[in-house]
Image (cartoon, rainbow, N blue to C red; front, side, top):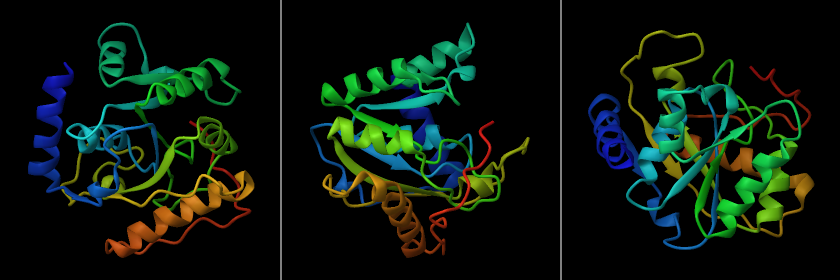
Length: 212
């Protein structure tokens, strides 16, 4: 299934989304990497997984509601997803994420915790910064551009728009935890702006969006 998805997903995004990958040279060939990615659409996990398929083994974190018995659970496990219980301190997820990074693999996480409601960036959640510091993995910001326009919240059909994946340079692991979340979201905003999609970072004291 992974091989099948590794062929079909990039093909789909190339043909339908005319995708462009920028900064792939910033992805280390070995060692634990934590990718911090903006979250705009249900397409984001698929796009990120497809972009890294030929470079590294990528794990992800997804809400446990997606792991319904049968085909949904099979697909989520095929994409190497770790279920998370949102709204609570999910220690099982945290341990599983640390184990993945501890064995030298890569993990994708959405610092915002949920999809944007309006296409703008939201503040990073504290659980993300804790994982980043505890894991001691290389932290790379990633900007996904175009997925909100292709499939925003509530949309039933895809809209054909160009997609861009931008891998930023590693962020210093010595960044204080209380500053890390804001720094990551600012870097993602900068990557989006430099790629031709002007974006403002979230306000430092902005309230977190409702998790749904």
